[in-house]
Length: 615
Image (cartoon, rainbow, N blue to C red):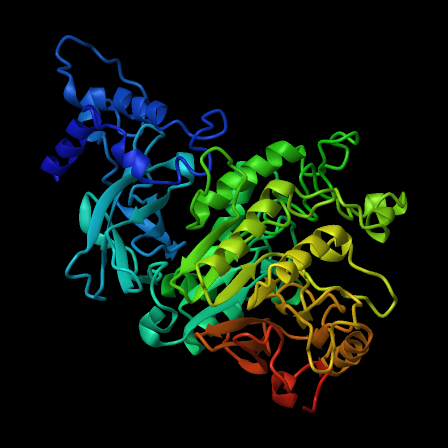
């Protein structure tokens, strides 16, 4: 033990002093080039060195008076690196796989039998290793990283030098005690961008499990556990609302959230800590890599570029801020906590708010992840502006300068679609937050908080697909707390699009229900009652082919060069931890058809309402 502590002390005062801090990406992401917002590892190192001098400087000339501290007056008991024990309190996770690297994550909290924990001057050292074997031998990559209270004791490192399209296993341990280890996690890399489509994933279909909207107080996160244990998902994709900023008692299930409505970095960290105690969520993170994006509730309800429903840095000032924080401070705190707690890469060091990014998975597909909520979204329905009728003209007239994503992201998205076609990827799968297709409700009211509130922006994207003959585009959505499956076409254009045959469509949308959040039809609505509403909706909306609004759950996409198949799963009970679920509907898209394959869902579903039931 003595030699190990000395090794780290020597390293800390050497020229490579900040290496172990910098290796933990949680310190720098997403503020690498913005020290005024982020954490300066040089300053943190200086704080540690100031403490470590007590370990390496001859104390003979000095006289220390006794004063209370964690270790008493004898500084020799105060290690430069914490060696009093660690708890890996939230298991492990991985995410954002490339062809030769993947991010690994854990949380390492100091533990002590005496209750004496380190002060801010003592870092925690964690080591990691990754292997193609679950025995973790041979080791393909390994290393060490520091963490501390500055980043909520989270650790996010990049494992590099990996083989493409390969499954891996990884584990963290305490640098000062190799016997203290985390659970073993499973992850994988993607195929190299130039890998032929029929060779991706060893020639087997690649499966994504897709989730959204997991509210802690609304129920147990059984969908995650079901996916981990009962599907062959290779990668988990989360489309947002991973956490919610709101509070609640959990009602009859007693699943109350801690703290208050989120406003500060402490608030957001506490909420992540609590969410990640859910057994199913922990298992899902341990089982496969995740690719995530945020929706609104990672910050606050109905977020847009200058505010939310109740905290706006606008002419309204902070009068809509019961949490005690204005929007800008709240958003920066939320983004920092998000990057600490999730294995997500920082995309652009000069753009700390950018989460939109693209994954090239061989020639099989491009997985494009958008941000239609936080990045540069024009004003949305904030409830209070609904009464002033200031929001309604914005959707009744398709203003050309109105954007749900901002014009920088919109141009990047169009270029990414075109580049995907140019490089001859078979499929283009687009993960984003809100329902893209037009949804006219039974009361003839549109949801202006979705793409229906940004009609010109939607038209530009559809025009780009049609005009450039970009085939095999599949848009994913969450947010709505219900299931929707649609052909992609210009809304109400039944002259070029046939709702029965699907001819004239340019792609498909799969929108999924929530993991737990309450149905948008109404709370606790029974399947039969929800199906009545679904029947009305599929009759009203030409593009909409299936609707279901009772069950909580998720869906999977299984992709090979010829077919993309979507299977929707419904959880029967989220009031207790279980894996009681069933497949509610299955859909297919054939390469080159640009529509749902007919008969839609094979003409039969186990829940909800179909528009087309016969060929």
